[in-house]
Length: 365
Image (tube, rainbow, N blue to C red; front, side, top):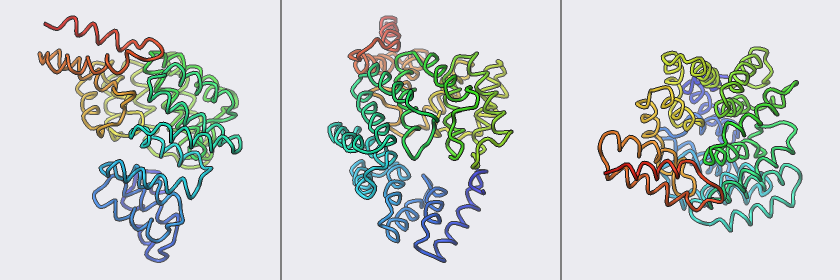
């Protein structure tokens, strides 16, 4: 309950008290690691979890993303142990796939996907999500989008983190964003899952309302307005059966103000959301669109190195190229713009950002 309301310190103290009383308390360690995540000394909780419950796959899975400064090899080693302990759990496979892809080991990801595909329905969907991850890392954006949309067509409800729906949706939206089709794709997802009557949203995960909010943020203005209203109504009616963090109301509040053209209230709402949280790309985009590129730049500069990079480039590179041109740093503008052109010009479909970066280069002296 404390954690749901972002009261990290009380939740952290209670969690550590639980594991001091019982060092093999699984949920105590899970909450201790969650409330210590990406904080100074957080690795102590992770090592405690791994030492006292080495048979628990989540002890190794959590460490892969809780310690962003760890070497890639360590994250892969921990992720491989999580998958070895729970070989048919899509979430652990998808987290490992992120780091294997960064290391260029896409064939290993395909091998894990082939193993998952031998399981049940959730595992087969998880395998499709892994293959879409590989495709997007190879610049096959159109193919990744087609695959992930087809997989969504098999879902009765969405945003179940543990079984892989959430990473599937994120990959789908990432591919659509690169291709400039995010409004169309998010509209489709919003109509199918959020705006359906009854809603087709998994009600028993604290991540559901968060992920549904991200769908709304990617949608066209007309659909996003209805989507944000629907989610607000569902939360008021206690549709979601587990607590959602108070970041969700802040995200929805900021989105509603953006859609209404009320910039100052949008800024106040979204300043309460930590920059690296999921959805940072759309917040940066919408800040820039609302005339507050200074806040978009704050988000861009806070993102850990490598985050948001898709097949060698990111939208941070695109925004930074425009900023460099505006301040007269033509060398940096050219370098960043060329980076985007080199990375995305070989995609399997036209990428609007490539044309814009070529135009920027042509305008430079």
